[in-house]
Amino acid sequence: MTDRVTLIATAAFGLEMVVKNEVKALGFDNIKVSDGIVEFEAALEDIPQLNLWLRSADRVLLKMGEFKALLFDELFEQTKALPWESLITEGGQITVKGKSVKSTLASVRACQSIVEKAIIEKLKETYHISRLEETGAEFTIQVSMLKDIATLTVDTSGPGLHKRGYREKFVAAPLKETLAAGLVLLSFWNKDRLLIDPMCGSGTILIEAVMIARNMAPGLDREFASEKWPVIGDKAWRDARASAEAAREPGGKLEIFGYDIDERCIRACRVNARNAGVEEDIVFERKDVKDLWIDKKYGIIISNPPYGIRISEFSEMNEIYISLHKTFRKKKGWSLYILTADEMFPNYFKRAQPDRVRKLFNGGIKVNYYQYYGERPPPEGKREEGRVKRENNH
Ligand SMILES: C[S@@+](CC[C@H](N)C(=O)[O-])C[C@H]1O[C@@H](n2cnc3c(N)ncnc32)[C@H](O)[C@@H]1O
Image (cartoon, rainbow, N blue to C red; front, side, top):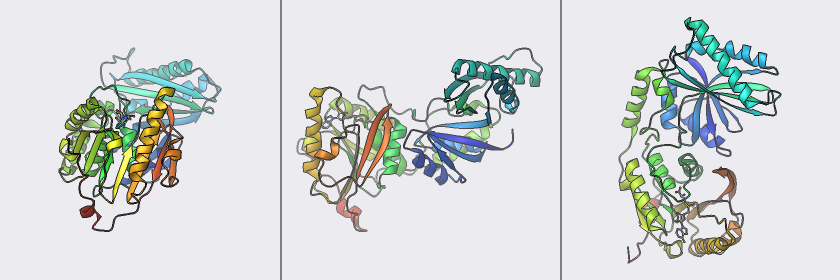
Protein backbone atom coordinates (compact mmCIF):
# COMPACT_ATOMS: atom_id res chain seq x y z
CA MET A 1 0.00 0.00 0.00
CA THR A 2 1.34 3.43 -0.85
CA ASP A 3 2.20 5.50 2.15
CA ARG A 4 -0.27 8.27 1.22
CA VAL A 5 -3.85 7.31 1.93
CA THR A 6 -7.23 9.00 2.12
CA LEU A 7 -8.81 8.98 5.56
CA ILE A 8 -12.33 9.82 6.64
CA ALA A 9 -13.08 10.98 10.17
CA THR A 10 -16.80 10.38 10.59
CA ALA A 11 -18.76 12.98 12.53
CA ALA A 12 -22.21 13.10 14.11
CA PHE A 13 -24.59 15.44 12.33
CA GLY A 14 -23.73 19.03 13.26
CA LEU A 15 -20.22 18.28 14.53
CA GLU A 16 -18.48 18.16 11.14
CA MET A 17 -16.76 21.55 11.54
CA VAL A 18 -15.58 20.67 15.04
CA VAL A 19 -14.04 17.45 13.71
CA LYS A 20 -12.52 19.39 10.80
CA ASN A 21 -10.89 21.85 13.20
CA GLU A 22 -9.51 18.98 15.25
CA VAL A 23 -8.06 17.32 12.15
CA LYS A 24 -6.52 20.64 11.13
CA ALA A 25 -5.04 21.19 14.59
CA LEU A 26 -3.35 17.78 14.30
CA GLY A 27 -1.50 19.11 11.27
CA PHE A 28 -3.54 18.05 8.24
CA ASP A 29 -4.87 20.26 5.48
CA ASN A 30 -6.85 20.00 2.25
CA ILE A 31 -9.76 18.81 4.31
CA LYS A 32 -13.07 18.20 2.55
CA VAL A 33 -16.27 18.28 4.57
CA SER A 34 -19.65 16.81 3.68
CA ASP A 35 -22.55 15.41 5.72
CA GLY A 36 -21.03 13.31 8.50
CA ILE A 37 -17.69 13.09 6.68
CA VAL A 38 -14.36 14.85 7.08
CA GLU A 39 -11.96 13.64 4.40
CA PHE A 40 -8.24 14.31 4.08
CA GLU A 41 -4.94 12.87 2.91
CA ALA A 42 -2.51 11.39 5.42
CA ALA A 43 0.19 8.79 5.79
CA LEU A 44 -0.59 5.30 7.07
CA GLU A 45 1.57 6.08 10.10
CA ASP A 46 -0.78 8.94 11.00
CA ILE A 47 -3.61 6.51 11.78
CA PRO A 48 -2.48 5.89 15.39
CA GLN A 49 -2.20 9.60 16.17
CA LEU A 50 -5.66 10.36 14.75
CA ASN A 51 -7.33 7.56 16.67
CA LEU A 52 -5.61 8.50 19.90
CA TRP A 53 -6.32 12.23 19.67
CA LEU A 54 -9.60 12.93 17.88
CA ARG A 55 -12.15 13.89 20.53
CA SER A 56 -15.34 14.59 18.63
CA ALA A 57 -15.07 12.18 15.66
CA ASP A 58 -16.91 8.85 15.73
CA ARG A 59 -14.35 6.78 13.82
CA VAL A 60 -11.36 6.99 11.48
CA LEU A 61 -11.89 5.11 8.22
CA LEU A 62 -9.36 4.29 5.53
CA LYS A 63 -10.89 4.99 2.14
CA MET A 64 -9.99 2.27 -0.34
CA GLY A 65 -11.92 3.55 -3.35
CA GLU A 66 -14.96 5.20 -4.80
CA PHE A 67 -16.69 4.39 -8.09
CA LYS A 68 -20.02 4.32 -9.84
CA ALA A 69 -21.82 0.97 -9.82
CA LEU A 70 -25.22 0.33 -11.36
CA LEU A 71 -24.81 -3.42 -11.73
CA PHE A 72 -23.59 -6.07 -9.30
CA ASP A 73 -20.95 -7.09 -11.85
CA GLU A 74 -19.57 -3.56 -11.80
CA LEU A 75 -19.51 -3.57 -8.02
CA PHE A 76 -17.67 -6.90 -8.04
CA GLU A 77 -15.05 -6.04 -10.66
CA GLN A 78 -14.25 -2.58 -9.36
CA THR A 79 -14.03 -3.83 -5.77
CA LYS A 80 -11.70 -6.61 -6.86
CA ALA A 81 -9.50 -4.13 -8.72
CA LEU A 82 -8.67 -2.27 -5.47
CA PRO A 83 -5.35 -3.12 -3.72
CA TRP A 84 -6.79 -5.15 -0.80
CA GLU A 85 -3.68 -7.33 -0.66
CA SER A 86 -1.59 -4.32 0.30
CA LEU A 87 -3.63 -3.92 3.49
CA ILE A 88 -5.04 -7.31 4.39
CA THR A 89 -2.54 -10.02 5.22
CA GLU A 90 -3.05 -13.67 4.46
CA GLY A 91 -4.78 -14.54 7.73
CA GLY A 92 -6.88 -11.34 7.90
CA GLN A 93 -10.42 -11.64 9.26
CA ILE A 94 -12.90 -9.84 7.06
CA THR A 95 -16.31 -8.47 7.97
CA VAL A 96 -18.28 -6.45 5.45
CA LYS A 97 -20.98 -3.98 6.49
CA GLY A 98 -23.12 -1.96 4.14
CA LYS A 99 -25.63 0.75 3.53
CA SER A 100 -27.47 1.95 0.46
CA VAL A 101 -29.22 5.28 -0.04
CA LYS A 102 -30.98 6.35 -3.25
CA SER A 103 -29.09 3.76 -5.33
CA THR A 104 -30.00 1.21 -7.98
CA LEU A 105 -28.13 -1.43 -5.99
CA ALA A 106 -30.57 -1.11 -3.12
CA SER A 107 -30.15 -4.48 -1.42
CA VAL A 108 -27.60 -3.94 1.33
CA ARG A 109 -27.15 -7.67 1.92
CA ALA A 110 -26.45 -8.31 -1.74
CA CYS A 111 -23.90 -5.46 -1.86
CA GLN A 112 -22.17 -6.78 1.25
CA SER A 113 -21.92 -10.27 -0.09
CA ILE A 114 -20.65 -9.15 -3.53
CA VAL A 115 -17.97 -6.99 -1.93
CA GLU A 116 -16.92 -9.78 0.42
CA LYS A 117 -16.65 -12.23 -2.48
CA ALA A 118 -14.60 -9.78 -4.56
CA ILE A 119 -12.14 -9.11 -1.72
CA ILE A 120 -11.75 -12.79 -0.86
CA GLU A 121 -11.19 -13.69 -4.48
CA LYS A 122 -8.55 -10.99 -4.83
CA LEU A 123 -6.73 -12.21 -1.72
CA LYS A 124 -6.89 -15.85 -2.74
CA GLU A 125 -5.43 -15.01 -6.15
CA THR A 126 -2.69 -12.87 -4.64
CA TYR A 127 -1.70 -15.31 -1.91
CA HIS A 128 -2.24 -18.44 -4.06
CA ILE A 129 -4.47 -20.04 -1.47
CA SER A 130 -7.80 -21.84 -1.74
CA ARG A 131 -9.33 -20.42 1.45
CA LEU A 132 -8.61 -17.64 3.94
CA GLU A 133 -7.52 -18.76 7.41
CA GLU A 134 -9.10 -15.71 9.09
CA THR A 135 -7.02 -16.04 12.25
CA GLY A 136 -5.15 -12.72 12.11
CA ALA A 137 -5.98 -9.01 12.39
CA GLU A 138 -9.56 -7.83 11.90
CA PHE A 139 -10.62 -5.72 8.94
CA THR A 140 -14.13 -4.30 8.97
CA ILE A 141 -15.00 -3.04 5.53
CA GLN A 142 -17.97 -0.85 4.76
CA VAL A 143 -19.61 -0.52 1.37
CA SER A 144 -21.72 2.65 1.24
CA MET A 145 -23.88 3.17 -1.81
CA LEU A 146 -25.03 6.76 -2.20
CA LYS A 147 -26.77 7.82 -5.42
CA ASP A 148 -25.09 4.92 -7.25
CA ILE A 149 -21.59 5.81 -6.05
CA ALA A 150 -19.94 3.05 -4.03
CA THR A 151 -17.46 4.11 -1.36
CA LEU A 152 -15.35 1.37 0.19
CA THR A 153 -13.70 2.02 3.53
CA VAL A 154 -11.92 0.01 6.22
CA ASP A 155 -12.49 0.90 9.87
CA THR A 156 -9.22 1.70 11.65
CA SER A 157 -10.88 2.40 15.02
CA GLY A 158 -12.84 -0.73 16.01
CA PRO A 159 -15.28 0.25 18.77
CA GLY A 160 -16.44 3.86 18.20
CA LEU A 161 -14.09 6.56 19.45
CA HIS A 162 -16.64 7.55 22.14
CA LYS A 163 -15.60 4.40 23.99
CA ARG A 164 -12.74 5.99 25.91
CA GLY A 165 -12.94 3.36 28.61
CA TYR A 166 -13.42 5.60 31.67
CA ARG A 167 -17.17 5.40 32.07
CA GLU A 168 -18.78 2.80 34.32
CA LYS A 169 -22.15 1.39 33.34
CA PHE A 170 -24.78 3.67 34.77
CA VAL A 171 -28.51 4.23 34.40
CA ALA A 172 -28.67 8.01 33.75
CA ALA A 173 -28.94 9.14 30.11
CA PRO A 174 -25.29 10.00 29.51
CA LEU A 175 -24.05 11.90 26.50
CA LYS A 176 -21.65 10.18 24.15
CA GLU A 177 -18.15 11.23 25.08
CA THR A 178 -17.59 12.47 21.51
CA LEU A 179 -20.64 14.74 21.70
CA ALA A 180 -19.66 15.99 25.18
CA ALA A 181 -16.20 16.86 23.85
CA GLY A 182 -17.86 18.58 20.87
CA LEU A 183 -19.99 20.72 23.22
CA VAL A 184 -16.88 21.86 25.06
CA LEU A 185 -15.01 22.57 21.82
CA LEU A 186 -17.98 24.57 20.51
CA SER A 187 -17.98 26.74 23.65
CA PHE A 188 -15.66 29.63 24.47
CA TRP A 189 -14.44 27.82 27.56
CA ASN A 190 -10.71 27.56 28.12
CA LYS A 191 -8.70 26.20 31.00
CA ASP A 192 -8.43 29.58 32.72
CA ARG A 193 -12.19 29.88 33.06
CA LEU A 194 -14.48 28.65 35.80
CA LEU A 195 -16.74 25.88 34.48
CA ILE A 196 -19.86 24.34 36.04
CA ASP A 197 -22.21 21.60 34.88
CA PRO A 198 -25.10 21.87 37.38
CA MET A 199 -26.80 18.68 36.07
CA CYS A 200 -23.72 16.66 35.36
CA GLY A 201 -25.16 13.09 35.31
CA SER A 202 -22.14 10.87 34.89
CA GLY A 203 -19.79 13.85 34.53
CA THR A 204 -18.99 13.38 30.85
CA ILE A 205 -18.89 17.06 29.82
CA LEU A 206 -16.54 17.99 32.67
CA ILE A 207 -14.27 14.97 32.27
CA GLU A 208 -13.91 15.77 28.56
CA ALA A 209 -13.20 19.42 29.44
CA VAL A 210 -10.37 18.42 31.77
CA MET A 211 -8.92 16.11 29.14
CA ILE A 212 -8.90 19.02 26.68
CA ALA A 213 -7.38 21.40 29.22
CA ARG A 214 -4.64 18.99 30.19
CA ASN A 215 -3.88 17.92 26.63
CA MET A 216 -4.77 14.32 27.42
CA ALA A 217 -5.30 12.08 24.40
CA PRO A 218 -8.79 10.60 24.83
CA GLY A 219 -7.83 7.24 23.32
CA LEU A 220 -4.82 6.43 25.49
CA ASP A 221 -6.65 3.87 27.64
CA ARG A 222 -8.15 1.75 24.90
CA GLU A 223 -7.26 -0.39 21.92
CA PHE A 224 -8.00 0.13 18.22
CA ALA A 225 -8.66 -2.32 15.38
CA SER A 226 -5.70 -1.10 13.35
CA GLU A 227 -3.23 -1.73 16.21
CA LYS A 228 -2.95 -5.26 14.89
CA TRP A 229 -2.56 -4.32 11.24
CA PRO A 230 0.90 -5.37 10.03
CA VAL A 231 0.86 -2.58 7.43
CA ILE A 232 0.98 0.05 10.19
CA GLY A 233 3.20 -1.88 12.55
CA ASP A 234 3.87 -1.74 16.28
CA LYS A 235 6.43 1.02 16.11
CA ALA A 236 4.03 3.68 14.79
CA TRP A 237 1.57 2.81 17.56
CA ARG A 238 4.24 2.74 20.28
CA ASP A 239 5.61 6.11 19.15
CA ALA A 240 2.16 7.72 19.00
CA ARG A 241 1.27 6.40 22.46
CA ALA A 242 4.60 7.55 23.91
CA SER A 243 4.21 11.09 22.55
CA ALA A 244 0.61 11.23 23.80
CA GLU A 245 1.81 10.18 27.28
CA ALA A 246 4.49 12.86 27.17
CA ALA A 247 2.05 15.57 26.04
CA ARG A 248 -0.19 15.17 29.10
CA GLU A 249 -0.07 18.24 31.33
CA PRO A 250 -0.27 18.03 35.12
CA GLY A 251 -3.59 18.54 36.86
CA GLY A 252 -4.71 20.37 39.95
CA LYS A 253 -4.99 23.90 38.53
CA LEU A 254 -8.50 23.94 37.09
CA GLU A 255 -11.74 25.32 38.48
CA ILE A 256 -14.37 22.85 37.45
CA PHE A 257 -17.50 21.91 39.39
CA GLY A 258 -20.15 19.27 38.76
CA TYR A 259 -23.47 19.03 40.57
CA ASP A 260 -26.43 16.70 40.33
CA ILE A 261 -29.53 16.14 42.42
CA ASP A 262 -28.94 12.39 42.42
CA GLU A 263 -26.33 11.07 44.83
CA ARG A 264 -25.81 7.97 42.64
CA CYS A 265 -24.78 10.25 39.79
CA ILE A 266 -22.25 12.00 41.98
CA ARG A 267 -20.79 8.66 43.03
CA ALA A 268 -20.60 7.58 39.37
CA CYS A 269 -18.95 10.91 38.44
CA ARG A 270 -16.22 10.35 41.00
CA VAL A 271 -15.55 6.82 39.77
CA ASN A 272 -15.50 7.97 36.15
CA ALA A 273 -13.19 10.88 36.91
CA ARG A 274 -10.85 8.55 38.76
CA ASN A 275 -10.88 6.09 35.84
CA ALA A 276 -10.02 8.95 33.49
CA GLY A 277 -7.23 10.16 35.81
CA VAL A 278 -8.83 13.58 36.36
CA GLU A 279 -10.34 13.26 39.84
CA GLU A 280 -8.16 16.02 41.28
CA ASP A 281 -9.47 18.48 38.70
CA ILE A 282 -13.22 18.38 39.34
CA VAL A 283 -15.23 18.95 42.51
CA PHE A 284 -18.45 16.90 42.41
CA GLU A 285 -21.23 17.56 44.91
CA ARG A 286 -24.86 16.60 45.26
CA LYS A 287 -26.95 19.71 44.73
CA ASP A 288 -30.34 20.65 43.32
CA VAL A 289 -30.01 23.24 40.53
CA LYS A 290 -32.53 25.33 42.48
CA ASP A 291 -29.89 25.76 45.19
CA LEU A 292 -27.11 26.76 42.83
CA TRP A 293 -25.61 29.86 44.33
CA ILE A 294 -23.12 31.87 42.30
CA ASP A 295 -21.08 34.71 43.73
CA LYS A 296 -18.56 35.02 40.93
CA LYS A 297 -18.82 37.59 38.19
CA TYR A 298 -17.57 35.42 35.31
CA GLY A 299 -17.93 31.79 34.42
CA ILE A 300 -19.29 29.21 32.04
CA ILE A 301 -22.13 26.71 32.28
CA ILE A 302 -22.22 23.75 29.90
CA SER A 303 -25.06 21.39 30.66
CA ASN A 304 -27.57 18.94 29.36
CA PRO A 305 -30.70 19.11 31.53
CA PRO A 306 -33.09 16.16 31.61
CA TYR A 307 -35.72 16.38 28.93
CA GLY A 308 -39.07 15.02 29.85
CA ILE A 309 -40.70 12.28 27.90
CA ARG A 310 -43.83 12.02 30.03
CA ILE A 311 -46.18 14.99 30.39
CA SER A 312 -45.86 14.75 34.20
CA GLU A 313 -42.16 15.55 33.86
CA PHE A 314 -42.65 18.79 31.99
CA SER A 315 -43.39 20.97 35.00
CA GLU A 316 -40.22 19.66 36.64
CA MET A 317 -38.27 20.67 33.52
CA ASN A 318 -39.83 24.11 33.61
CA GLU A 319 -38.75 24.52 37.21
CA ILE A 320 -35.17 23.73 36.23
CA TYR A 321 -35.29 26.33 33.46
CA ILE A 322 -36.84 28.91 35.79
CA SER A 323 -34.07 28.24 38.34
CA LEU A 324 -31.42 28.81 35.70
CA HIS A 325 -33.18 32.00 34.66
CA LYS A 326 -33.36 33.30 38.25
CA THR A 327 -29.72 32.49 38.96
CA PHE A 328 -28.25 33.92 35.78
CA ARG A 329 -30.58 36.69 34.61
CA LYS A 330 -28.36 39.37 36.14
CA LYS A 331 -25.06 37.53 35.80
CA LYS A 332 -23.99 39.05 32.50
CA GLY A 333 -20.47 37.67 32.88
CA TRP A 334 -21.72 34.09 32.65
CA SER A 335 -22.00 32.22 29.37
CA LEU A 336 -24.51 29.39 29.20
CA TYR A 337 -24.40 26.48 26.80
CA ILE A 338 -27.47 24.28 27.14
CA LEU A 339 -28.15 21.12 25.12
CA THR A 340 -31.78 20.13 25.12
CA ALA A 341 -34.45 18.65 22.87
CA ASP A 342 -36.98 20.93 24.51
CA GLU A 343 -37.60 23.91 22.24
CA MET A 344 -39.41 25.68 25.08
CA PHE A 345 -36.09 26.36 26.84
CA PRO A 346 -35.60 29.93 25.45
CA ASN A 347 -39.13 30.83 26.59
CA TYR A 348 -38.06 30.25 30.18
CA PHE A 349 -34.47 31.39 30.10
CA LYS A 350 -35.22 35.00 29.27
CA ARG A 351 -31.96 36.81 29.93
CA ALA A 352 -31.67 37.35 26.17
CA GLN A 353 -32.29 35.51 22.94
CA PRO A 354 -29.66 32.82 22.40
CA ASP A 355 -26.64 34.17 20.51
CA ARG A 356 -26.50 30.96 18.57
CA VAL A 357 -28.56 27.79 18.28
CA ARG A 358 -26.89 24.73 16.81
CA LYS A 359 -28.78 21.68 15.67
CA LEU A 360 -27.21 18.44 16.83
CA PHE A 361 -28.28 14.86 17.46
CA ASN A 362 -28.06 13.08 20.79
CA GLY A 363 -28.63 9.34 20.54
CA GLY A 364 -30.83 9.81 17.48
CA ILE A 365 -32.89 12.61 19.08
CA LYS A 366 -32.82 16.03 17.45
CA VAL A 367 -31.52 18.53 20.00
CA ASN A 368 -30.60 22.18 20.11
CA TYR A 369 -27.43 23.59 21.61
CA TYR A 370 -28.49 27.01 22.94
CA GLN A 371 -25.54 29.35 23.35
CA TYR A 372 -25.79 32.53 25.44
CA TYR A 373 -22.55 34.46 25.45
CA GLY A 374 -21.60 36.37 28.57
CA GLU A 375 -19.29 39.33 28.85
CA ARG A 376 -15.63 38.43 28.72
CA PRO A 377 -13.62 38.75 31.91
CA PRO A 378 -10.85 41.36 32.00
CA PRO A 379 -7.34 39.92 31.54
CA GLU A 380 -6.96 39.28 35.25
CA GLY A 381 -10.35 37.53 35.09
CA LYS A 382 -9.18 34.27 36.50
CA ARG A 383 -8.23 35.81 39.82
CA GLU A 384 -11.64 37.46 40.03
CA GLU A 385 -13.56 34.32 39.25
CA GLY A 386 -12.26 32.41 42.22
CA ARG A 387 -14.29 29.57 43.62
CA VAL A 388 -18.01 29.05 43.68
CA LYS A 389 -19.32 29.57 47.14
CA ARG A 390 -20.02 26.22 48.76
CA GLU A 391 -23.25 25.56 50.61
CA ASN A 392 -22.86 25.17 54.38
CA ASN A 393 -24.19 21.65 54.29
CA HIS A 394 -21.47 20.35 51.91
C1 LIG B 1 -29.54 14.19 30.76
S1 LIG B 1 -28.81 13.93 32.31
C2 LIG B 1 -27.20 14.61 32.14
C3 LIG B 1 -26.27 13.63 31.52
C4 LIG B 1 -24.85 14.10 31.50
N1 LIG B 1 -24.64 15.20 30.57
C5 LIG B 1 -23.92 12.94 31.16
O1 LIG B 1 -23.31 12.96 30.09
O2 LIG B 1 -23.84 11.99 31.92
C6 LIG B 1 -29.60 15.09 33.32
C7 LIG B 1 -29.20 15.03 34.77
O3 LIG B 1 -29.88 16.06 35.47
C8 LIG B 1 -30.07 15.62 36.81
N2 LIG B 1 -31.11 16.45 37.43
C9 LIG B 1 -32.45 16.37 37.26
N3 LIG B 1 -33.07 17.32 38.00
C10 LIG B 1 -32.09 18.03 38.63
C11 LIG B 1 -32.10 19.13 39.51
N4 LIG B 1 -33.23 19.70 39.92
N5 LIG B 1 -30.91 19.60 39.96
C12 LIG B 1 -29.74 19.03 39.58
N6 LIG B 1 -29.68 17.94 38.75
C13 LIG B 1 -30.84 17.46 38.25
C14 LIG B 1 -30.42 14.15 36.65
O4 LIG B 1 -30.16 13.46 37.87
C15 LIG B 1 -29.53 13.72 35.49
O5 LIG B 1 -28.35 13.13 35.98
